[in-house]
Length: 326
Ligand SMILES: *[C@@H]1O[C@H](CO)[C@@H](O)[C@H](O)[C@H]1NC(C)=O
Ligand SMILES: *[C@@H]1O[C@H](CO)[C@@H](O)[C@H](O)[C@H]1NC(C)=O
Ligand SMILES: CC(=O)N[C@H]1CO[C@H](CO)[C@@H](O)[C@@H]1O
Image (cartoon, rainbow, N blue to C red; front, side):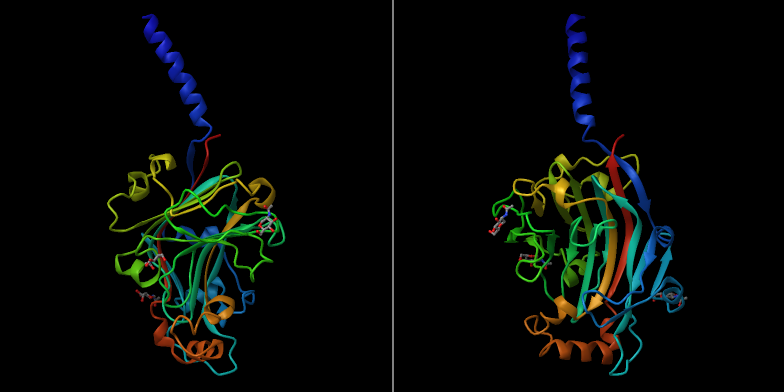
């Protein structure tokens, strides 16, 4: 009996100390639920893309965004040939109404935009601070037909990453300060095949999970649809299954707090999906991607070749956010 009581007491101490790190479902979006949870932006692309971001009414009318019971789609216009003085091709940029601090964001993604001139991103940034104050976390980002799959942080000066980190991806850069190296940010490239673009779409996509805490920084994991190691709570996404990141293995990208005070450089973030064309990233990489001569050729391609944008769409199965158990 004595043994049992001791055992129980120890167990309750263990449970108490662990519960501080427990995350529970805070938001779960599927199909039409996205329409109420995001704003369809209509401003000029701050990254100088050949794009016209389309408001919700028009986007629905033009069928650039639609939902079913298990899918939510945002796409580029793949029908219209545009005049040479057009701003760009119609596409979508949406921002979540909700913001999150310590959290785990899990996306079950079926298809992502791919092809020459495309620059899609799934990312988070501060609503209440003026960028880059409050920080930016890019979970999925890439350009053109490249196979790279990048995760990146962008901050005010003073936030660095160590070169060697507990991650399966490759460190590309270590200074998160937007003023360094043309806003490259601190960047990790995933080594997982199928994590971006055509390779990702060919297997029916997969799952990305991003965990951020002020205390321990940022982790990003990826599992392709056909990856047998995807954790059950990610694969099933049932609200009763609690995320247990400590069992998810080494993340593809890890941004630890060793040389960055996350409480100082990051605050509450909103979630963004966008798809732009050419601009600061895809335009400047257009030639090295083997897509064409230069940024002008990128723009011409965007205006004149609608059918080349039939793969330029996001198809999301679900988006779930978990926050610390109160
Ligand atoms: C919108 O596009 C999808 C995919 O091509 C199609 O299934 C759907 O019928 C279209 N909806 C309308 C209203 O045109
Ligand atoms: C970050 O790295 C840069 C470049 O190596 C260095 O100049 C700077 O002092 C570092 N900042 C911090 C806060 O470690
Ligand atoms: C699908 C894909 O593009 N995967 C790439 C991710 O990054 C690694 C590292 O550079 C490449 O080897 C993969 O091909």
